[in-house]
Image 1 (cartoon, helix red, strand yellow):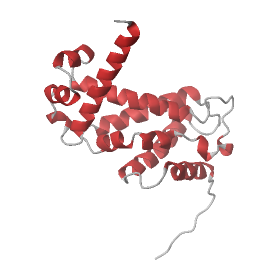
Image 2 (tube, rainbow, N blue to C red; image 1 turned 90 degrees about the vertical axis):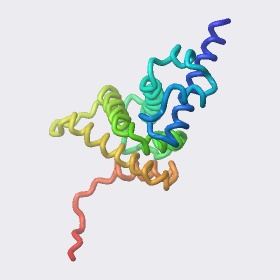
Image 3 (tube, rainbow, N blue to C red; image 1 turned 180 degrees about the vertical axis):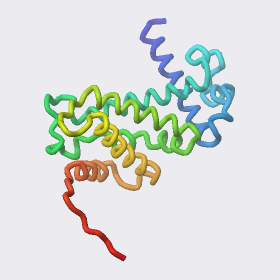
Image 4 (cartoon, one colour; image 1 turned 45 degrees about the vertical axis):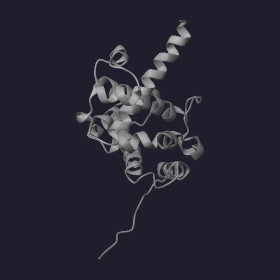
Length: 195
């Protein structure tokens, strides 16, 4: 068998195993799912499973990795071709992160309703923090760079997570537009509502 055919077979079988795990997670808790159930749903055998993964936890990590790799690409999309990233000139349609979450809405919905959510959120946060720290060189003498990154990522992901938890109530275009408006909004004062 040629290397290309082998790679396609591996890709097809691992994709089927990932999908089977997600399908099972939509109806039962991760801890209650067995490898036997995964392979039966995927239409493969245990030998195929163990050729790729040592455990269902490794399979879940593969699900996370695939999503996070795609998420990183969507995060970098607005600035990947730029020398200087001008946030104040950022067009809403260049923000691709909401499109990523919406395109994978069924997967995120399953993960957000499962017991694996806390470590998954941590992986998303750590991944975006890492690429923001590596890619973006914020320069401001009086603001601690680490604090700025933590603040920015928590704000972005708080908005994204709320959107997911609300069932993707708004369109990705609306969310992109709102994000850009919030980034560029610089309040200097606010009205106090008195009761």
